[in-house]
Image 1 (cartoon, rainbow, N blue to C red):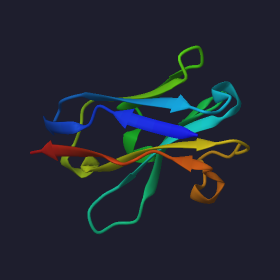
Image 2 (image 1 turned 90 degrees about the vertical axis):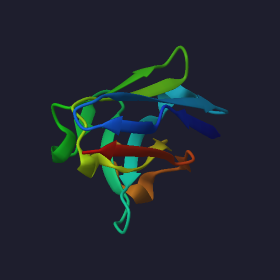
Image 3 (image 1 turned 135 degrees about the vertical axis):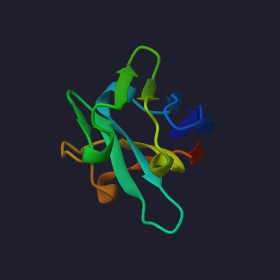
Image 4 (image 1 turned 120 degrees about the horizontal axis):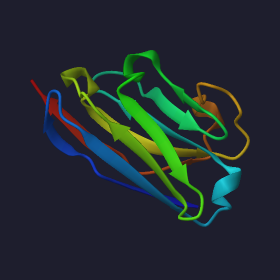
Length: 121
């Protein structure tokens, strides 16, 4: 299983970015998909997940939106009203059996390569 994320970059505070994550090698619709991030000097943290429902960490509620297209094997993270504290490396994740919200890291089966987001003030 491969997860290929794209869409990171540098943006000013208040701006928007959209992440895409393409999945291959699995029955995509059977997986819960999630996004995690790791800020400099901090542990990796859960951001959002989607299986039948969506779930967000409190700090991004109302600003970020996760969605999926099972026909295209894609998951997306729309990030609006970005803040400097959103600066981190973002990771796409897939879990075959997780039904938990938030998605625990120990239930992630596959990780994509990290993609940097830098939000300038």
